[in-house]
Image (cartoon, rainbow, N blue to C red):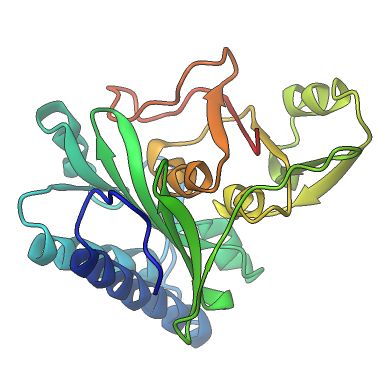
Length: 260
C-alpha cells in the first residue's frame, strides 16, 4: 500500500499498528453485535461498556509489545494520566469514542489512537467498526482510508465555495454553537455525525467546518485531529491558537476544525 513520507515510525511498525487497530475494532464490533454491553457508570458520571474495556486491553497490551519505550495514556486507565507529566512522547487512546452512540445502537462510534510528541498530535489512527474502515495520517504525512479488504485511498479536504457544510452533533447544538452557525455569511448545510467521525467527514471532503463549543477531552480529539491535518485541514482554538495535549487539565478548550 502507498505510504506517506517521513513517518514518525518505520513502515513495518505502521503495518503492525494498523493490524492492532483492526483487532481493537473487531473486539468492539463483537460486543456490539452480541448485545452483552455490560454497561457501567464511572465516577465522573460517564458510561463505559465491555467494548471500551476490550479495546483498551488490546491496544495497551499491543502497544507495550510493539513500542515498549513509549508509554500509553488511556481514558480507561486513570493512573495513566500522570504519564504526560514525565514523558513528552506517548500514545493517547480513546478505546471507544461515542459510547452513548454505541449504547443507543446508532453505529456512530470509533476507536482512536494518537501519537503525541511535545504537546502536539503527530499521527493518528481511527477505526469505524460498523463501516469496516480505518483512517490514519498526520500533518505532513498525508491521510489515508483503508477498508477491510486492504484497499487504501488517500483522502483530502475539499471545501465548497458556495455553501458551508457545518458538521455537528444534535446533542451539542448549544446557544454558542447556534450563534457560531448563524454568523456564517454563506448558506449553511447542517450535517449530523457522532464521535470523532465529524473530523473524518471533513478530512474526506464531505464537510467543511466543525465548531466544538462544548467540552471534550484530549483523547476524544487527538487521533482524528492528526488525520484531519494530514488531509490538509486544521484544528484551532477559537482564538486561533493551537490545540495542545498533555495539559494538567484533560479538557480541551473550545475549538474549530475546518478544511481551511
